[in-house]
Image (cartoon, rainbow, N blue to C red; front, side, top):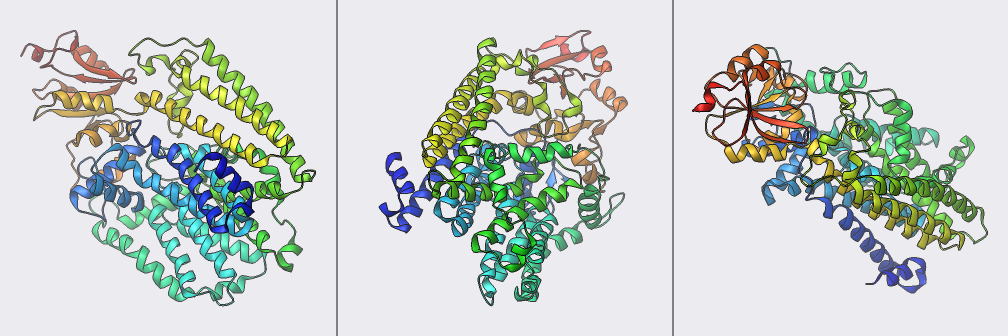
Length: 630
């Protein structure tokens, strides 16, 4: 089926049956999803920190045949997260083997499921075009793409919310909601709790309660078969929590699972007193502002989208139309999540579960614009927003092209880390490492910057010209095509930058020379080089690293205790007969290592693998270690 044929089907409903038109729209969405998400499953290698920590937990779950108590680093309990994302990754590993792409497969499939549910939700309130535009905005949005690059559950939270709200909206259309609809709503809440804890209840219940309160329909809660729904919720959500509690009671210095999971990881995290405090909080203005960034360029129409919301109390109580009902719920969906995290600790990606609600609002307005007469206020406001978008796009295009033309192509086999300027205070934020970029480093991104600049300029100009001619569908296709290029180049940029974020190259080098009896030591926290454990399937030791993800598990009596070193113990170990592979950042090599001498096995991404003696031909730094002559 050609693009021209598909465009004809979308723009001319009478040209085909309703069913055929719907299938064509779904086909387009699947193609867009495949180009963006399937094509980016295989690169870069998994990243240090959350990506490989979570993948390692899934791998050990499969190896230990323990689907209740998660472990990392060959024996440390890891109980701070809900299990669904690990179950999904472990099943993927079981079916397809342990690969980078199989680790990413569950998230990739989850994105497709979310797009189809958003299409369904948008279609039922805004028509086929509204559902299509909402799903298209989500598929080509920057936020959903970038936060599916590593193994976190936030998009899955959005999926369960979307499915749950679909059930809830269906219940509003039934005089006596069916048990299957009510049970479906309860099941999505249970799955959400298994995906990211108690917010799986807070978000849907908060949104539904406020919606019913505003519309004067709280009695509808009594129609939702609360007793049987609650029992089903417990059947799905309770077993893992109970088993995790029974299998991980308070032992030695470790408090039990229930305290750690519910008090430390939920309540204390919310009030910013969680221990250990290994994260920073995004400023509130930035947190709200990023909501617009995550769905750019479609958020150029955010003002029009928000104007659709019925704002008057009289409208809420007098009875909303079907379209208004959906619009109000979608607005509350995004608003409740934004509001909740406004009073808590927050990272950039915490708002991602609310992005589908915003995409639906945007899709609803774009459908309304497309249906409006050529001289309507909707068409005029669309042209105004497109003009503003074009100005921003041209500025962005000029900046990207200038950076591309003025940057110098780096030498062959360059190390991107050598072109950066470190900002360690920013690394507790998700995008902290990208603040290290310097004008010199941008030469490594010459081609992605060039193509991004061309795409931004071309896409926004075409969008404006086509909207001036009242060709709304073609204008939106131009924006989607622009984002296809933009996201592909963002993926290329991530691959270029990945040596800074991943230690896989260093892990491969250790694997080439590893001998039985050798040890691996990380300078700092476990997650700083969690890639080593994941790719080598070997336990790592830690120098001054009893913190962050490993802290709680290390308190249990059955946790390995002899792998934590301080400077004194590691200095002795470095002088022993054991060969040590020491992972460290280049500016953090301890002085006593420099004084005693070391051999450099590998350097990449601003990180070293050093050894206390060498059996291979590697560069050694004097004073020579006595074991080098062996």
